[in-house]
Image (cartoon, rainbow over all chains, first blue to last red; front, side, top):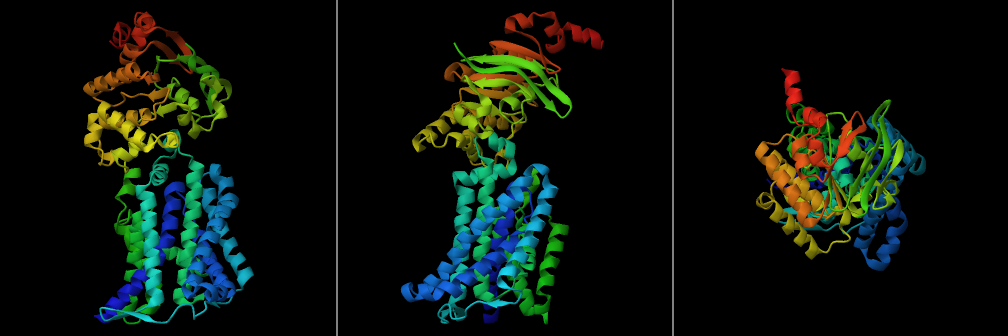
Length: 305
Length: 249
């Protein structure tokens, strides 16, 4: 039973990364009706930016402010830098082709994905890079007989906290309502005085920022990162998006966490399951697409049509 | 009294098809102007062009004396021009209250929280059914209730002019009565000017101060409602008068 709960915590942690990345897919899809293929590579970019920050600056910060500030600093740095990258990508790859329709936009996204992947390889090299291991105290938290590494707990609460904030912004604020309205009917939103360009910029800024944050936490969790990991990771987060219901913000969160849990438990309990981990993910994707293409919280999507 | 909205000889095309071929009209303060015409006459195109959703090929549109094209479409609400489009276009997965308050989005920097509450109360007094259903998703409302929500959303910013496109479309006669009663009320009590596009010519003429009849993208006829009502051509073509009935028989 203890193993089960430890696996569950692992699953929720990994799932919360998926959820953060899935949020970016879902927001962009909701507003642009675009599957942003470059999103997975923005995740990778964030991971590398956080890595570089830790290697260069963590010791400096740690000496002056303490260990945790180095960790938080790296996450914040990747968040902000990725937000900037998101704005740049929108400006360079998407805005010039909005008027051309959806297909050119998708092709442009694919091109951006390939560009980013190769740029990352050119800058940081094709080999695996390893996150510094002495980031946080290796102490574990004892809780109900479970032993939970402190880093894992911090990452988990940080990502859940960010998701709560996201939920609040999108579901409870005036601007959030404007974003949802834009996703439903862009022209009507314009007639109500909503500046669509600002909403577009918002999703293309916040999405990559959340993805970059997840990239750093993912690096801290698994330690090793590679330039091409965004493709596979992006597909998984995309699966989480579909699982929860694409275009639906709470759905992306639920789908991400659920996917992480399912994947971890199946890998843990099926003999030799670890090797099939990715297989399970895409099996889930296929099953969802066959039996519930609108996703778990996706009734809303059906209404849109 | 000055003209709020002046449309001067505008032309609009969809590709090679000319939808408006030189339309001129005026809407003065505290006026309801009806735009009538058959399907495809260019009525909706006219409103969409005024709102900046369609490009002008020629001519110009003045709003309060300024060229309307000097504003981006999303800035027009703030200038005092609201558009309640055809088909209601409420946001089905947002609540009734969220839909209503989005009507204030364009003027959010000009409206205090207390004022926002007052405006909301005001709309709920005009449409009590919206108060009852404020927490419901707007997609669950009946057609008539959705039309009331759409009108309330257009009205809540207290615009100078509302462009209203086919408010009676697809509604039961009793609901149409109610909608037109409210149109008259907001005109009389709030002094809002309306450019009203309708297929229900009889109803529209009953509330309008002036009317234009569009045919094939041109103004075929214009005048005061009482004159148009007695015009034989109007009677036969738009008021279901004896002419049409005889032809059908």
